[in-house]
Length: 105
Ligand code: SF4
Ligand code: SF4
Image (cartoon, rainbow, N blue to C red; front, side, top):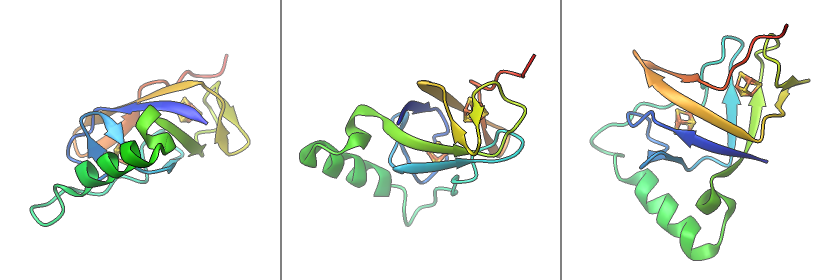
């Protein structure tokens, strides 16, 4: 499990930099494949899910997630899983990119 912080506020799974998905998939170019656009009908979903996680003591409350990743060129890539203890995802023009990505030497 990794600690995850995400600044992509436009994602339906984001509430105040918390991601409410237990499993997050990162793509071959270090973007978040689990990103879903927030809209008027679902903008409060993440808030409700986060509050539920806090009440029930689920891992999301502590920002613990299972991060799967296909970016093989990253130093933290470990056969489909991320091995970094902490991961930061940053919102950029219509995508959420892993800011913890570190190229292999
Ligand atoms: S962009 Fe990815 S990491 Fe960020 S809240 Fe959405 S699903 Fe979670
Ligand atoms: S730090 Fe590297 S291995 Fe971990 S999610 Fe980001 S790109 Fe993937």
